[in-house]
Length: 166
Length: 251
Ligand SMILES: [Zn+2]
Image 1 (cartoon, rainbow over the protein chains, first blue to last red):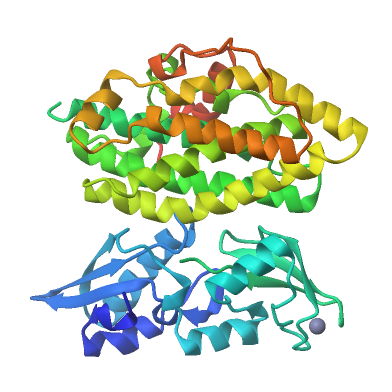
Image 2: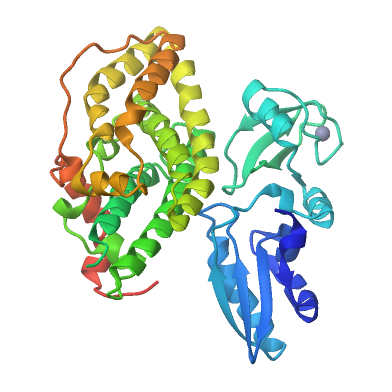
């Protein structure tokens, strides 16, 4: 599944792009890839969103925020949480990845590299402060379900790494 | 209820995650260090998230307006179908890790099979959960190795925990009426087929961790029938406190 399988009515895109992830405010939910469809049917907008992690408490807030944004734009809406197909970090757009990095969160690596980093202690994650890959895993679990904790051994910066989910 | 077997089948899966999630949640602010505290509560959060998906589905099947909250909060002790393993207390970090590992190894194998279910909701939930649970299993098996193959004291504590919790492993592979019915319909996972692979894998990790594999053939059961150890009552007292004290309150 790629981003092209999303069904989002063009006129809704700018509205949804203004809704951000409550835990990573610099990131639009569109760049996060959680909006799977948004279609105007008569006077109702039907939106389907999919959770990043099952326990992500942000999903309820995201649903409310979408409703609010659409209401301000004059639409009534209905939000559905769908589980299939399961969200993957591949759905984060290039613009989303850049926003993460600028915010101080290292963007997810490819699955193989991710495994090497989290399991075998390989140093591949780029420090968000100085760009060095001389970084090490502090903990596989971080401040939210989607992140791991890292530290840079060159500049000592502690930072979050967005774990690959595939 | 038309689909009573499916309803009970889902509860059988979800109650394990609910009760283990609650146990891990107790560690919030009490983990041995910041990283493990955060890890345990992250795992707890994943499990609760999974439970929500299962209970939302169960509510739909019940079809009588029961919500996910009703199902998780308003049952009595004997109506919970979780295995005894997950309700065992947080005696010390060795027990927490051993309990987690013994469950994760099962959980991961189970979800991999559930992904193949022709029931599209169950397979979608399993698809989602399997990714998360593989992180849980990495975490717990890692700590089993580190503490087992650690200092004399850490090995001793791990050995004690494995000796104590081993008797709760066999129940993971017991089938209730609902399980058998769902297997017969091709929807459920036949857990009896997972047993051999489970013990082989667990033994492999324990050996790497220089922990002796218990030889005892004495196993406890009952949780899946609703017959629990005394620990569950205390868990539920805390879990259900708000709903019991302020009935029908909403968040
Ligand atoms: Zn650095």
